[in-house]
Length: 178
Image (cartoon, rainbow, N blue to C red; front, side):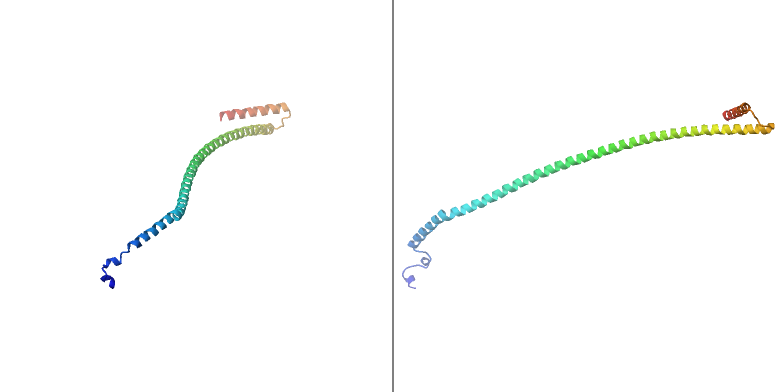
């Protein structure tokens, strides 16, 4: 407590002496030079490597983003082309189906007409055969009937033939009138 008596005020206790400030400054300068010379380049090198790595990753991400956008655009273009092509194939298939149906319908109509014509010819042929057969039987029956009416059998073929022809002629006249 003699320090107060010697003329030092209370604030002087907290302030360092000039020689302490000087030597502290010298040590600080030495440490700063040492720090800037040895540690700062190493830190700067690490920071630069990190910045370069980050920039490289950003560039890679941008490149990947660009490639992804190009791939997406290419995919969308292919999808659009595929849709157009599918639509064209569908339209072609519909047109071909309608063409096939029209051809099948035409062939069916032709076949139906041919079957109908064949059936008509067959019916006419059978009708003629039936008519010829019927005329023959009517002729035979008329000869037999005429023989019974006359009481004798018509012996000559020429007489039988004349009688059959006359009966058939009468039948044809009746058919024409009807």
